[in-house]
Image 1 (spheres, rainbow, N blue to C red):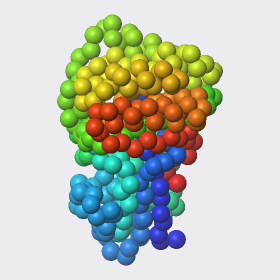
Image 2 (cartoon, protein in one colour; image 1 turned 180 degrees about the vertical axis):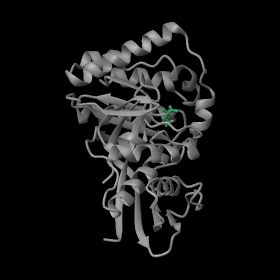
Image 3 (spheres, rainbow, N blue to C red; image 1 turned 45 degrees about the horizontal axis):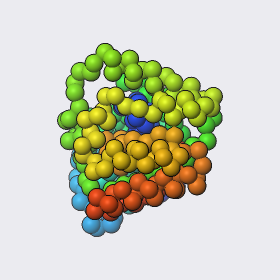
Image 4 (cartoon, rainbow, N blue to C red; image 1 turned 90 degrees about the horizontal axis):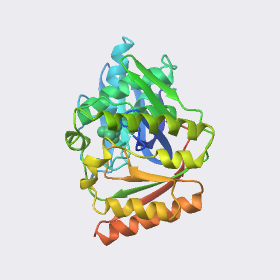
Length: 306
Ligand code: HSE
C-alpha cells in the first residue's frame, strides 16, 4: 500500500469545565487527507479543496504538513509524501478544525509506514501543528480526533492523555455560527492568573463531571458543565450567548457552552431528539441575531481518525 485516505472528526474541546484538558470526538463532520508515499525525499502539499479555503500550501505552515514532518523527523525517516487535503471543517470555528487535518495526516502516514507509533504517540506531533496554527500546543482537540471518545489530558509535561471510560449515552448538538474567531485571539482575552475561588469551582466540577460520565449520572453531568475560567471572558464574542444557554437548558440539554475557543456552541443531551431540538433552538437565536449557522448532531463517537 502506498496511498491511503483518512477521515478525522471534528471535536468539542474544553467541555465547559475542562479548559485545555477535556475533549470529545463527533461522528462527523471532519477533514479528510489522501497521503501517497513518493520516491523523492520531500513532503509536499499537492492540493487543498475546496479551492475557496485559504490555507498555506507550505509544509512548514500547514497543520497536516507540520504534523507529518514532525513524525518523520522523530522516527528518522526521509520518506517523501504527497498530501492532498479535503478541508471540510470551517477555519476558526471552535470545532477542532486545525487539529483534524493534523490528526488525519498523522494516522495516514503512520498506517502507510506500518504503524511505528501508537495512537497516543501521534498526539505530540499533532500538538506541534496546533502550535503553528494557534500559537499554543494544546492537546484537547487533537487527542480526541486521533483517539476518539472522551479524553482527559491529565498532564502536559510529560504528556499524559487518558481515554475516559464513559457509560453515559450522550448526544451533542454542535452549532457553528458563520463568524470566524481565531484561537489565538480567543486565548488573548484569558487571564494568566485565576482566582483561588474559581480554581476550587473548576476542579470540583471537572472531578464531578468525570464521575457523572462514568456512573452515569445525568444530574451530576448537568451540574458540572460550568466554566469559571474561560467562558466568562469569551462569551462576548458570541452574539446571544446568555440566551443560547437559557434556551438550551429550557429545551432539555444537560448543559451547553462554547465549543473549544468558539464561536461554535456545543450542548449535551440524553437523546438524539432532544439534541436536534436544542440545536435548532440555538440556531434560531443566531438567526435572530442575523447570523447564519449549521447544526450538527452526533453521539460522542468512539472512533477517532480512520
Ligand atoms: N482549549 C483550547 C482553547 C481549544 O480553549 O483555547 C482551542 O480550540
